[in-house]
Length: 251
Image 1 (cartoon, rainbow, N blue to C red):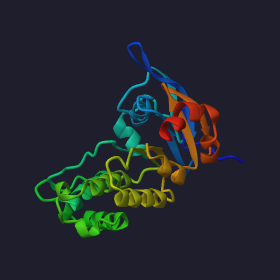
Image 2: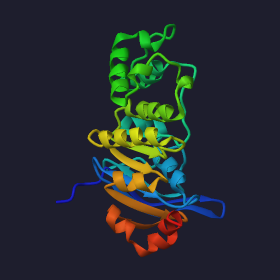
Image 3: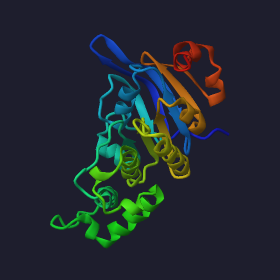
């Protein structure tokens, strides 16, 4: 028996004037699945994820998360339900330490207010949880460095950690490997594989080698519309996908 979807997108539409950025998109993400969303630049991938996270409203259609209609919910409400997003461009408190960045996310997840007048890293409960997460991320040795001192790849890993700290049921990853070197990309890839035991993932990524290594299923978005969904093997040999996207990637 097939399991019910964690995320169920039904006929989602978003227009920007005459541009149909999201063209009646329907797709599902299953529990503990890595579902990749690929397509050419300008296909509407980031616009779709912005709608899923609540940063962009849809013109029509519905988004169901764990069976609940979240289409009109705020980003904060969606995070509270277990839907978290890691951004295409890193968004960190650059002047804070790595530990303080993670502790702030842990603090938000725990729902504590704590004291404003001292660093959150001085709160023992926060520090213990944050350090445990940094250890999982491989960033524990950098805990007391400022976020601005990290390499670009390390900042991507830290940003991923901030999303994980909210204990999501579904993690939206928007090009997590963008700008990372080969070694750091491999670290991020292995971290994503490790995270699959904790959360489902909807992944936008241009690195096709990474997509085919990571994804259980892949949906292909072209001009705002899903033209195919299937396993990596199905997508790799899908004539319409090859013509619209993979042929361009392999040229």
